[in-house]
Image (cartoon, rainbow, N blue to C red; front, side, top):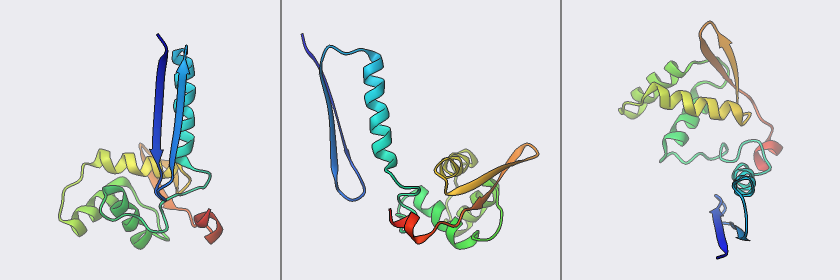
Length: 133
């Protein structure tokens, strides 16, 4: 019996990528395929959706809040959670905010520094070329 695995991804521009494996393969080969999927998701640019965040998502709302309110100052996840709740009249778990901020730091959108037992963030200013690629 031949095994088949197929993964399709559609990016924000509407381009669909298909990756397929057929035949005999191991868990290691499947993991390599998933690494390729992860690379496709990251794209070859620093920050895919920061120019025009989708404000219908929590991610988009958080990013918009950071871009408009915290351009030139440091902030914590508690600051973002408080401002998010104030501006959207909706509670948000601190763990959710922390996760999004950590991901933005990993993508090079935010600078993250340890301060005591918590993290402090600062928005990195990207050039127009970095946003366009």
